[in-house]
Amino acid sequence: MANACSSPTCLSQVTQALPPSCGPRRLPPLIALSYLEAAERTQSFAAAAKELHVTPAAISHQIKALEEHLGVELFVRHHRKVRLTPAAKEALPVLQDGFAALAQAVEQIRAHGEARWIVTVCAEPLFATKWLVPRLSPTGILDPLHDRHIGATR
Image (cartoon, one colour):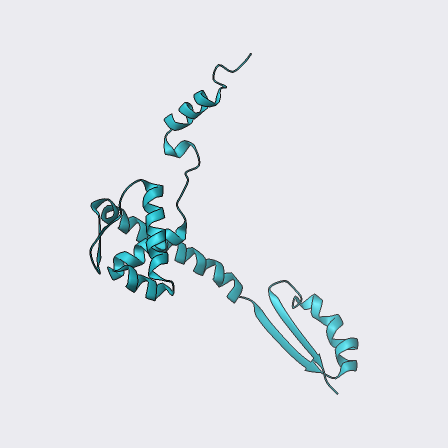
């Protein structure tokens, strides 16, 4: 049996009618969101640019692109100062919580890398090759969580 709704127009209408939880949402770039947060905190595109080591024009372009992506103004621009619009002010705490959650997740991932052991052994070449290396594996020192540095010296 043929699908009653197979035309591109019909599929588009069905997709638009779905709630956001039913399909992938197109998020704006994280860089633009981070620029938004920095510009709000510093109340200036120039100060945000200095903090983030980019140009004020880069901040301005990213904010403009974010506003276009979201379809809403985020800042009221004054001569040397910017102020959040009510829409941006309402969303900012959730955005900041999101960045905090991302930072926490990154630290959890980093913690796994910091748990590695580094074992450094220096020994005579004959001792290292004939006695030491054959005995490392059964003790568990050759598992993937350990870095091994074996140096043979004379």
